[in-house]
Length: 241
Image (cartoon, rainbow, N blue to C red; front, side):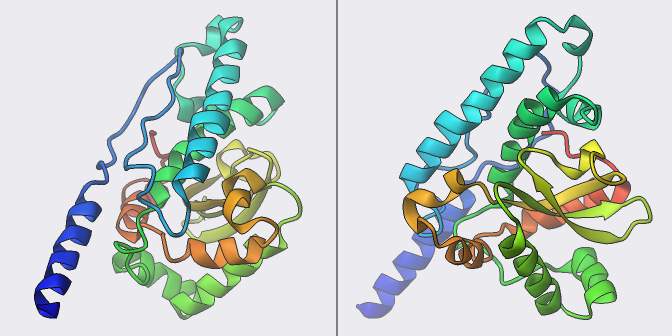
């Protein structure tokens, strides 16, 4: 009887994993719409609760979309550009950094994640090969990325991205800036990132940012991240999302 129950649980978990909508390229322009979540609001539990996703996606993410559309309403020259294009040209435009960055970064964030029941222990294939080439092991890479997240002061993001030489870098960015914008350094093409704003975790983890960061690694969708690395970042392309 116990064996049958375990089999049913495994089948249920597999069905849940398959419920995540596959990534498709998006080339939408103004007026932008809030991205539909690729999974149910409870899919990321216990890493992130449905209450957090509701607040994070339906309120914070939506606010970036709304404010971006309000800004673009008076900027007809920008209305034909995709979200990725707007991020690529945001270096000297703080409004685009805030709102186009906020919209784009969150679109990526939701796809970086999966249910902890579905997540692999780490990357494979060309991404793992590159990590081992630069860090000797995935554990070294993970430890350095974890430290960078914990050391970020205030609100922002921490990214793994591919620089112009084809190497992987880890970068911290303030607020909603990302490495495509070239605000603080040369361009770097993200394939993985974590939201270190309090609204991403506070309703569960409160002031324990370290616990949130540690839990993050249990919910990375490495299949998706490998795809983003192979098809976009390693080819010096921004992810069209």
